[in-house]
Length: 376
Image (tube, rainbow, N blue to C red; front, side):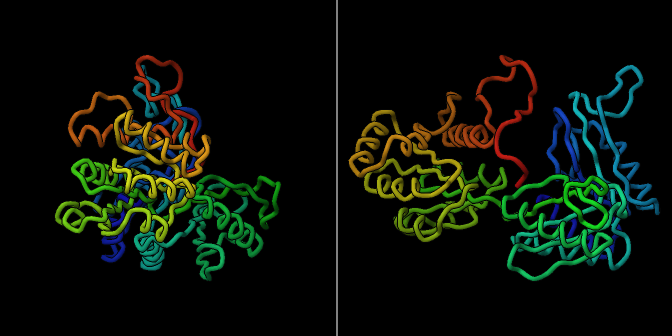
């Protein structure tokens, strides 16, 4: 959804009707996770995707039907029948796709308001009825706990209250998925299926050390959807001109900046300074955070010296084991750009629990089931 924000917001502002197709469930192997979106506007323009190209043509036709007045619907897609040239996934999995139109001025304004919140990095959850006793496509938009503002309804006061409570819990964890309720919001019943999509601000990538490798890492971090900050204590190096793709360029002592900005469980930290006067204070601060990944550049000899200094500062072995150093996967990288790819590959591996080995050497599902639950 975030990748499509500019196009979707412009269509809402112009009053252009559109249909959104959203992956709401995945069973087995599939190219996209729940929450993946494809849009079709009244002109027939397609934005985004819900698979690797396997089912988009059929989803397009469903979207056109929905835009023409057919009601919202949930469409399942399973494995394709090659002999019949049937529409389906070639990977053997199954996905369910909700297709819903936004055609009236009120609907487009409602969608536009949600998109504005997402663009402003305001945490917000969107709950949509998929099936059951409530009306398919009924929608509720919920802000975070402690923030007023719930718009829409799923049909009954009890269902709205139960879904609002659960949606806020899922939003705090950044999770997306289907929840089941009774028609009046009763727990432990399966009369109404509700898809809750969490829209959270993008995770942060903190890059320390304003060197050429940092510029390449910042570029690939932005490509992967991170909000990238580059930090260095040297004014001549920490400049916007040298890091045009970064969201922020900060001139400050690295450990001071990290302690002031903090890091959460989705943050990735890349320490590319390989200078003890910067590294050791910075890593002491980094290891006090719940950051998902702490990668540190340097040779094996440099890393051994770094570990000795950290042990002398009181860091235990469990904390030291969190450091990914030398940083990156073994790709044979030489250039800053190649090194950035190896760093990005290791970050992805940490996030989803991959092996880092060539897929051709492995058997079983390609899409690894490990890693954190939910989507970002």
